[in-house]
Image 1: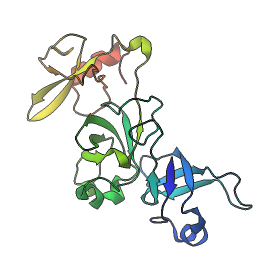
Image 2 (image 1 turned 90 degrees about the vertical axis):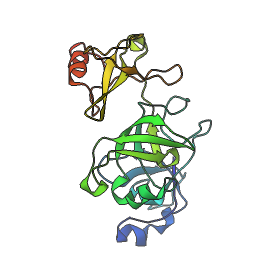
Image 3 (image 1 turned 90 degrees about the horizontal axis):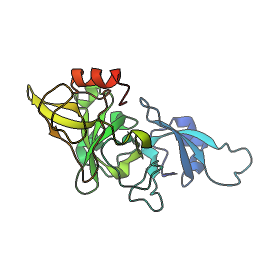
Length: 226
């Protein structure tokens, strides 16, 4: 859920004729990967005659509202803390540090994967795509209050046999490997450092960047992973 707090970033026609939207509460219907315009559905019932319920509004004018019973705003269907592997959309930059806010025009609307939780409400997010306008950076420290989070849960019947993630260093780059449960070597045979967050093991996902191509091919051939 979001609140319309301003008309910032919206076309002049909307700014002039739909100023009544400010203060409205809305449900996020769709957040495109390459556009800062978010499709929302107004929650006011009933609406005044002649006013439509669905709008495409710039994310800069939206404020994410906390979800009751959850520690951070988001679309998670699971009432659990955000964790590595969850998907996130940058919907605003009200809480993140100044470096991120300086790139807000290009960061807002981007999709990515949460790699790990940090202190003070921050997470490390790896964007699906990058831009020269972002200096080629794909990993950003962003505040949870600026993100819409989609919980990623493996199917219940696959959780026990799901490959975890192990890390190795190659040419000064961290490489992700697929690691069978209770092992310290990747499917490719490389010695790795398995990743574990409390009792949870992040699943190996071949589609991410910096993955071992051998591990990725093995996982795809066996029909596991995303």
